[in-house]
Image 1 (tube, helix red, strand yellow):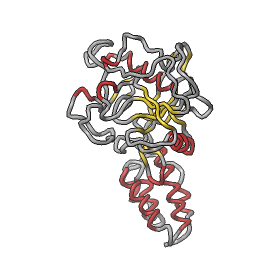
Image 2 (cartoon, one colour):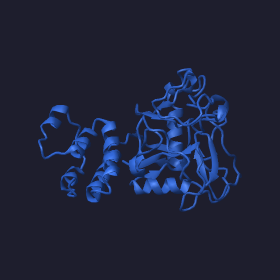
Image 3 (cartoon, helix red, strand yellow):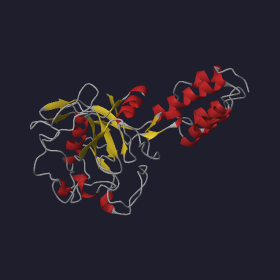
Image 4 (cartoon, rainbow, N blue to C red):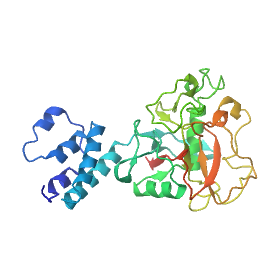
Length: 305
């Protein structure tokens, strides 16, 4: 195998989806890695095969393996599925529209973030590590104001209520009844209809696991320090605790801390997990030690528009 990575470098850019006839016409100059990379635009299995190829040839052809690895990472990031959250007012302040992972972040090849319906959420990762991984991928951890913007947007959409109208029935809470024994990929459907995992935003886009399945680490930009870690007690006017009494956890909104509670030095986690029970919800909030990872805590990425 040649150690020349030139042909892979040429494909390191991102390609538009192609069809099989185009692949057949590539000619003798296109080797298996090049063909797999082109196929990866439409076929996730091709990307997995390409990652295995890079590992296999690392000793024999390190430059070629490095080029393939870079191409896999670039294509994985390009394939990540994001949704747009519209401008939302939270605590009297506008949270500008932003892009957010449609699904909880999964663990992709070579430790890159993968966001698709087939990936199991990347859990057992500490807050500090999750924040670092997001930065390395050119994205950021979901902030507290952004998490609240998502929750308030979901709250106001009739389709997110079991009764079909705002305030009628309960908000859908996702996987929270303990019917599974670990976080699930988004293509898993519960046998219980009330465990619907997706919510619809005001722009018609859908987002999964805002409630249930696995907690999400949150960068606290309300009462946090420069690292997004809680720096003091929750004030009475903090949007973190400013939830109307008409949306209690009994109707599926989730529970959280009260004004005056002090969790300084810890990080926020939101949503609940697959066995949280009735406290799971779009506003559900807990805190956890920043250096510890847990199998029920994952994370979600954001990016500017």
